Length: 296
Image (cartoon, rainbow, N blue to C red; front, top):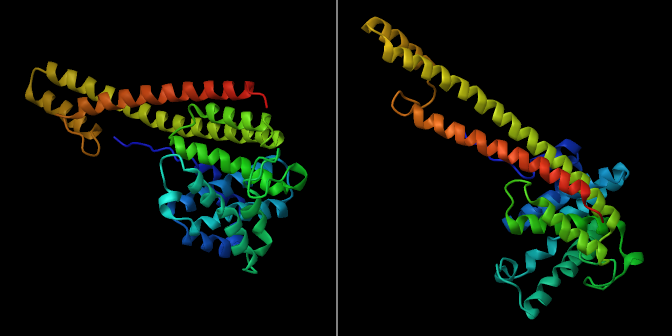
């Protein structure tokens, strides 16, 4: 049977925002990054773009902010791989090296006339409103709005990637971490609140995708029920002609690699898949209820 793999970020494809053309040069810069960091930059840019739209930002600012987000981790190109991809917690010394990706990225942007207008994303995306961020420990009045948006998108994707979400089930736990950081003064509460709307939109999209797959499964379950009816009639048939008639009916209903010998096991797989997807939808609806009750 076919197995649908839900793309966690499919709903955030930038193609739907028609921003690709204005980003061609900037997008090419991402090819110099390792695969993990490049995907992270794409995800953060996608999310940043949607946050801007939910924040009712002007189109030009949204485009500018999205490009800043694409380039926010450009400096990681010069961070040693053993630090960049270390699965365990970084040592204090390693963390200091990691932090330099902000100033390195800023310098790279400033030295390239095409990238210079977007240097803010690289430099400020780890600054916190309460002054606890880096590289300069700036506070709210000195942190550009675009960097405040990118920080929320960056933090969200970092947690999502670390926890390896395959679905939005349990995503409210991630949002609770961002709420804590907003309440402690690190993140802009208004942006975190808007993130809830983006996530609910994505959950609704996942529900729709899952329901489409359930509809497909149900069609196959009906087909297998028909096969069982034909098989039952075939087994009860008194003469060879009738047996062959029902056998041909069964063969017409079998698809792909299904056979008379294996269809029952395939049927069981479809029934299991149906239950799993129904449980997913129930859990996703519950996730929306939880998120709607969250307060920043």
